[in-house]
Image 1 (cartoon, rainbow, N blue to C red):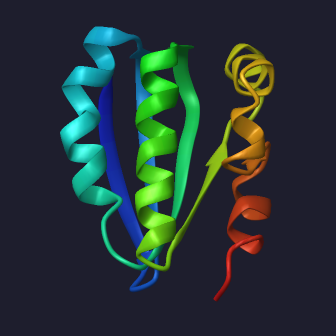
Image 2 (image 1 turned 180 degrees about the vertical axis):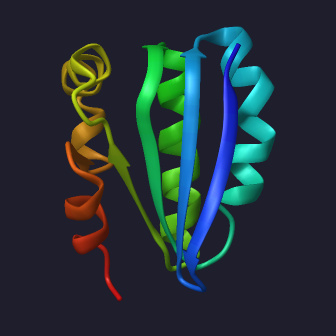
Length: 114
């Protein structure tokens, strides 16, 4: 089942890592924590490199928190690494038009305002 962890890189940058399946059960498990971690006016990198499945429920949680963060003055971007399945899902659902998606974490961080 899904798990979530985070690391504050600075007072304005947080990296949130999601692991395992972002299906209904996995998303329900982490959705509240994701919302808490994505609050405020900081920038967030969501690392999906270790997500094995991303459903529409998981996408909804990401987009909703990305919009909430944008309203508060922050920005959310996604890192997928070499995770072809997750990249395909994000592109097929056009989620990458709402939340920028990167292969490398360094590129994701560089895209954020400082």
